[in-house]
Amino acid sequence: MSGLNVEPLREKVRGRLITAGDNDYDEARAVHNGMFDKRPLAVLMAQQVADVIAAVHFARDNGMDLSVRDGGHSAPGFGTNDGGLVIDVSPMRTVRVDPRNKTARVDAGATWGDFNHAAHGFGLATTGGIISTTGVTGLTLGGGIGYLSRGFGLSIDNLLSADVVTADGNFLTASAQENEELFWGLRGGGGNFGVVTSMEFQLHDVDQVFAGPIFYNLEDAGALLEMFDQFITDAPEQFGGFPAFQIAPPLPFIPEDRHGDTLAAAVVHWSGPLDQAEKALQPFWDVAPVVANGTAPLPYPALNAAFDVLFPKGIRSYWKGSFIKELPAEAIPAVVEHGATVPEVSATMHLYPINGACHRVGASDTAFAYRDAKYAQVILASWTDPTKDAERIQWVRDYYQAMTPWAEPGGYINFMQDDDFGKIEDNYRQNYERLVQVKRTYDPGNLFHLNQNIKP
Ligand SMILES: Cc1cc2nc3c(=O)[nH]c(=O)nc-3n(C[C@H](O)[C@H](O)[C@H](O)COP(=O)(O)OP(=O)(O)OC[C@H]3O[C@@H](n4cnc5c(N)ncnc54)[C@H](O)[C@@H]3O)c2cc1C
Image (cartoon, rainbow, N blue to C red; front, side, top):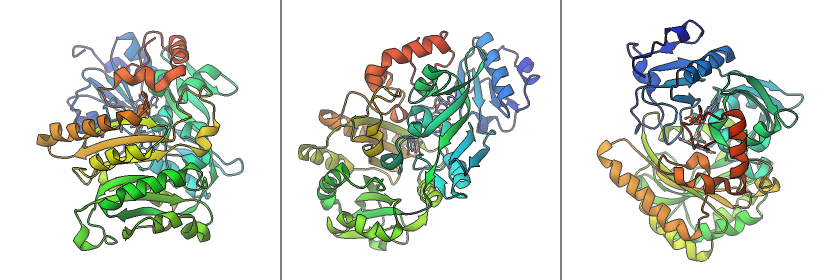
């Protein structure tokens, strides 16, 4: 595509079209995962829906590879490409809250930090990710798992409508009332069906929460996991949180002599009445001696930003994940054995509970098929030194492999890596064929193929 003239597109858009000669080209072509060093022909910093429409026509008519980018967090680096076009919607990030109806309309480029700030102004929130720099759109299209999932469902369960530019350049609104099949596919089917330009969400009363990490000695990891699995089965739905393994960072609440030690952890979150938090979290105080307690009452957006520092833009990353229906006692030694060898402060294993409200939605009501899974597990390594690439990737693969006996064939598409394409059908189970039909209707030429691709 290097000989293609992009000037005709520049004339049709208000957003900047950044190409190789521009000072900020290197910044514009980079995505969050520093493993991907790609050189698109042009990056459009879309300002308006009209820009998106022009860019979709241009990419399709010229047979270009097309990346669609919001927060840029895609682990496989789908937000950039070699020689194609990137539509970056991040300049479009207005969030308009309707406090009377408890809804929010969010432009496609907003991050969860933008969203939570706006909603918190009204004492409201909805299910989003655990890091504030992740894009609302990219995360929601795959499902959306976070602290509030058990209480309010996945992000997609709170999605009321989405505006979409499809491959033919048409602008559609998808909701339960119109373009219903598209709406069904958007709720879990990823970026396969078009460029989303805005989304509307249901909000809930969530203001101050009680939350933070609790650290335990590694030898208590098994007891913690066993306790967590029993607790989470019928824990109040105001509880959202997950067990993890973590090399202790040099934070003031962690005893100095434990900095750098590998510890077991539980990141807890309670969105019920604050005066009930200590009691609700009693099993976490009782299970084993606490090495460090980082819990406190705090505004929900502050919790959402608390771990951002561990995952700066440009850090190298590799992930894998599976759904887990049950975590029997026999599985725990494998979780602990590999968790105990986390190689970096920004490498971890998180076991996100997705029961509660997530289970009250039918397995075919949205494209997200695993409504019977208790957990979405992610094993992730992030590091800075490129000489460590092979070692870090191997750590993730070994851990993932060790979990196979207890893992479902499918995993959460937002936790898939670029070598996980073979898992796509498994990720969608009974919903895959219907997703293919939606793809055939809205993108028969597979313009939107830089994603966990559903082939038409
Ligand atoms: C540090 C970190 C923390 C994370 N935490 C969580 C978490 O707590 N919960 C969770 O569920 N997931 C989490 N994830 C995974 C995350 O959901 C996925 O990586 C998601 O795809 C990121 O969305 P994004 O918009 O930031 O990324 P992008 O790379 O911009 O987008 C990812 C993909 O989404 C699609 N897409 C994005 N914008 C649009 C659009 N406007 N229209 C159509 N398609 C679009 C495209 O296919 C794109 O390739 C995390 C990822 C990272 C790196």
